[in-house]
Image 1 (cartoon, protein in one colour):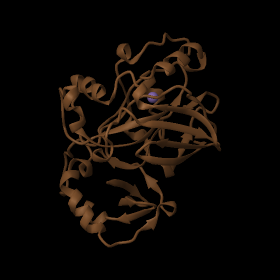
Image 2 (tube, protein in one colour):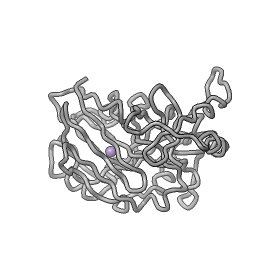
Image 3 (tube, protein in one colour):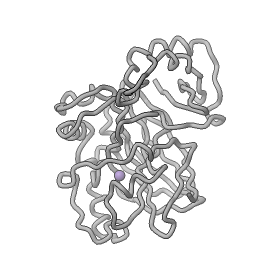
Image 4 (cartoon, helix red, strand yellow):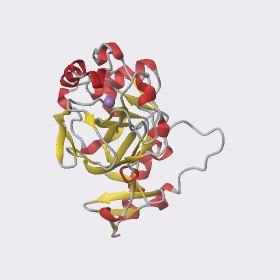
Length: 285
Ligand code: MN
């Protein structure tokens, strides 16, 4: 199942090149009162809602995908987790390119662990990326994004994929500089998620997916998630040794080699096998 959030927070079922509006199902979620539970309540209830979504869409035609504005398929993650230097060739390019390393020592994820991006940085493809610090280098990083489906902690790798609701394309946008990674990757609109959520049952092996991104038609990154140092299972195991994951939490699993700058006016085209493709425009803040 492919689920999107579109236009003015409509819930959509994506079929072929159409979006069928199934917002009536989301309206059945329990009313909330303070204090709100952590996490995304649509994702938390997804297993129960799936048959209702199928029923709501039955026999209906939708809008063309090209005519809707796609927002982030996850509305309310409690956190967005980043995996730094999780591809060897990206580690190598970071060591030789001072524009990436900024003079810091570059080591792999095994030493760095994970970092957090602000949940307020999250946007969908239609919203684009609004660059701040135009005098500094701003880079694209295409990444497989794993969306957690269940509250979980201390998850062993062999059960990790049971915790996954689905997958999307993530862009871990980054302004280069001396500040801590978490700050530089938390700028508003520097976490792009889209074009939709593909539920986990449609992805046989998240650790064997082609992923790529081009800018203005020029290929910049083109790899496969099997090149990850920590695969999806190990990332979930590692993360849950430190903190509880909540439904809707997003793990951006790291980026392959080829990270490079974007500028206002560019259009990024990102694709991941089994998920889809999205165009994301870059503009000035
Ligand atoms: Mn990254």
